[in-house]
Length: 135
Image 1 (tube, rainbow, N blue to C red):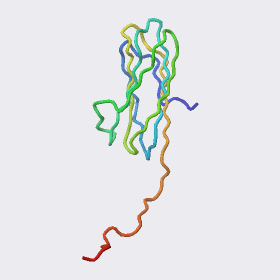
Image 2 (cartoon, rainbow, N blue to C red):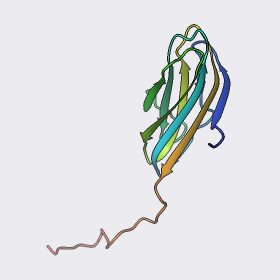
Image 3 (cartoon, helix red, strand yellow):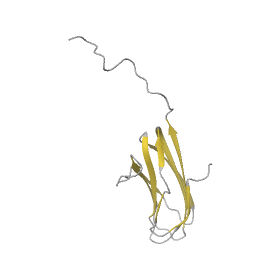
Image 4 (cartoon, rainbow, N blue to C red):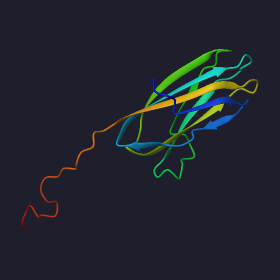
């Protein structure tokens, strides 16, 4: 497996981690996000992962484009991968929230993989400005 996109050694109780940058969706077909986290011994809630979209990389949607939860298991390391159909262009970032009010998360790692359309020249046939039928 490739090195993670980003890592975080510790996520505080009820803490939030934002990705350090955005995924540039270039001719994107699909996107997979993998998150691995180790739950503390007193964990009491799931970890939420949310994806946020921006058309230009500067103005981000208020509501998540998609989300999923990593079900907690006390003192265990859990990893989950989810697949998404995404817009062909724009940017995506992720936010990971420790839902626990009792314990921290450790060893957070996140990866992504994107499948893209092949770059091709646009094709056209004929001239749309040409009149086809005489009046």
